[in-house]
Structures are given as structure tokens and as C-alpha cells.
Length: 155
Image (cartoon, rainbow, N blue to C red; front, side, top):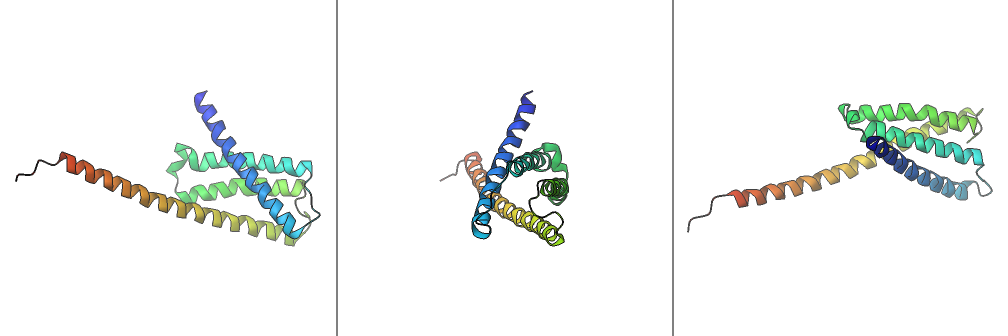
């Protein structure tokens, strides 16, 4: 039960962050490009459902310990493969854009993969910086340990 609750917390946190970012980005785009636009309840609920699915996929692909057996690239592809059909279904059934428009679908697909690449690169940069910081702290720890364990110097 404890493990299940920890998964629920991770999924909930991911979904909350995703939903908040999603609504904020939509709001900015709506103000900039569609001043009279508004969201219907179905669209909001589909965004919430997709956010929960994203939270689950994040746990499945990036948080869960068994998921780390795959390379990061494979986990990212698994994440995208699990996410794109769900977002496409939400977009189609809730009419996020005109579903009969090939140009809208091309834009949706391009935006999905562009955001996937940008977000992945941002995470890579953050993890590289964090990795260098941890390597420095570990090196400092080893230097201190070596200094303490070294035999006393003779004068």
C-alpha cells in the first residue's frame, strides 16, 4: 500500500505541474492569438485527463527504478509513443482544433515533437549541470577523507 501511495503521489505531482503549465501556456497563446477564445469544460477535462496520463508516463519511463534498465533515448521514445496517441485522441474528440484540417494536424504533430525535443534538451542540460556539481562535491568528500585517513606527517 505504501508503494502504491508513493506512485500516486509522483503521478499526482507530475499531473499537477503539467496541467498548470498547460493552462498557463494555453492562456498566453489565447491572449496573443485568439483574444475571444475560451475553453469548454470538456476541453479542460481532456487536458486534465491527458495531464494524469503524462504523470503516469513520467513515472513509468523516468521515475520507476525498473524503467532505468532502458537507455534514456529508449525511455523518451516510449514516453512519446505512449503520449502522442492519447493527445491526438483528446485533440480529435474535444476539437482542440478543427479535426478535418490536415494543416492543423501537421502543426499539432510538429509542435508535439518540437516540444518533446526542447523539453528533453532542457532536462539534459539541467542533469549535466547537476552531475558536474555532484562530481565536484564527491571529489571534495574524497579529498577530505583522504586527508583524515592519511598517516600523520613527521616534522
